[in-house]
Figure 1 (spheres, helix red, strand yellow):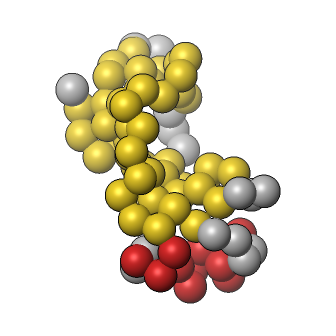
Figure 2 (spheres, helix red, strand yellow):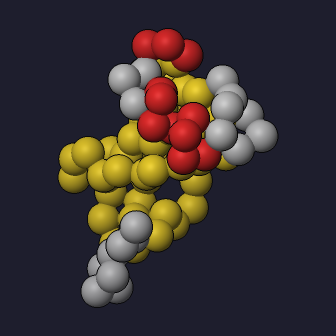
Figure 3 (cartoon, one colour):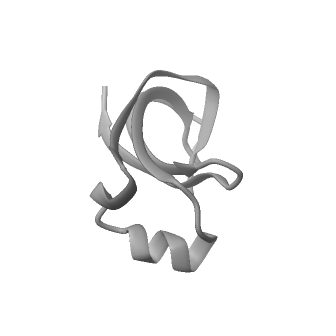
Length: 76
């Protein structure tokens, strides 16, 4: 990943779920069958050089599987 989440993720929202996710076939192939949701939120990240910064992150999540493929979408 290249970064570590410090604390809790705030302002969590669901962007898409079920068949509304473009990468659904890839998620099922890579992680298994589940009811997948794409979510976004705000978090404080610790970067590889030791600095911390706030960013909007996106990820996929399924019950029983957990979070998968976290991405930084923008710095705040």
